[in-house]
Amino acid sequence: MPPRATLALLQSALLVLCCGGAPSRVLWRALQPGVELAIVSPLDAKSSGPLYVVRVDTRRAKVGVALASEEKVPARTAAEWCRRARFAVAINAGMFQTDQRSNVGYLRHGGHLNNERWNSYRSVLAVNPKGSSLPAALWLDKETSQPDSRLAAYEIVVQNLRLIAKNRRNVWSPSDKRWSEAALAVDSQGRLLFLFSRSPYAMRELNAMLLSLPLDVVAAMHLEGGPEASLSIHAPGIALDLAGSYETGFFPEDSNDRQWPIPNVLGVAAVR
Image (cartoon, rainbow, N blue to C red):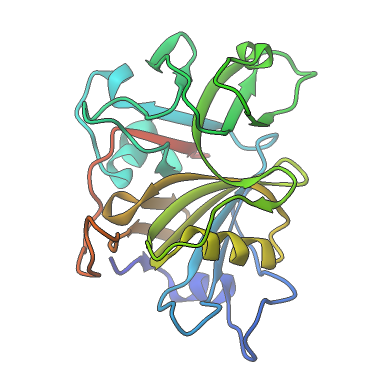
């Protein structure tokens, strides 16, 4: 889906690689306090589109969720969730089950349980702590399906499929399966990175790329792939509604030109 944005913004945020290989730095454009955008050009000839990265300092910007199950509404596109929830940024909260509402992994917002069951997925994010002494964002590598007592102190807890373990270890095996990707990462300062690539990657290749970039990624989780992968950004001077397309075995083509409705999003509250 072609993005709508000012040319000046794209030029100031876009990192152009002249010589191939990983860049030594990434150019960031401030969107609002605690929220920045970088657009990284492809690192190899197989990729036709850039990697979009929204970096969120959770000590300065409010991270939230919008859940169809909690609001008792149908699934909506990321752009629609931005308007409804007043988010400046929205991305998939995770893969969802066949009921079109429940996250595949555990997902809680306050007292609302979207999915109360922990599964074997190894990445967990918790944000918005009840106490000021706690980290604004807590990222866990879970090696068991048992809950962690630390998570009770956080308003939002979501469990998803692990891409990169917290020791910067690429945990995916080589595979021929590729898809457009929406992912979430965390850096060494505890900032969250909302990641989107329409160009399809095998996950081991994507992980290697993320670790090679100067994004300081220490861990990452998969949110969604293929045409359901979405990222919307609506801030002063920019309006981007990005949609994935290709997914091996499901949608093996690059023809999708619209965001698909999704039941759950992670978002960043807009500053008005």
